[in-house]
Image (tube, rainbow, N blue to C red):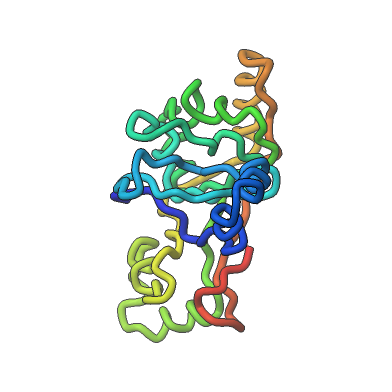
Length: 209
């Protein structure tokens, strides 16, 4: 959490066309925008990454990046139409009615948001078997399981739900209605609870929604 980075590399075609000629760069930038714009090439907080806000979904393990704009240039993350947030990050901000989530500095800044997914990490059968074969597996909490199951070639695997996480869509939608009433220019997104797991029949670094 010392810096914000994308765990998926920007497509080579995009980066290549950005540096081919002036015309190709213009065409790319008419569609792709920097998710976070660093102050310099060696910015230690934000890393440059281009995305298409019309089609690219964004997953956030933590919510802090969009409130740290004092340390970077303005960000285009608020143009995203599809936003995915880990259930842990969502719940602990929701439980305290954090302004980073529910006030002017939170979701209200996403004027084009169409879909909001709250993501739960679940065990595959292979992972369940691995834990059952471990002598202390039955005593593992979510944090221990996350650490135990992380593979060297998949260091950015998302955390399992904390024990007290309880996300209810009806409560979210009720609160969103109040936010909409107070902010008519904001559109309520579709909300889904989504499970995520590694595919058990493929390499460990191939996620599946």
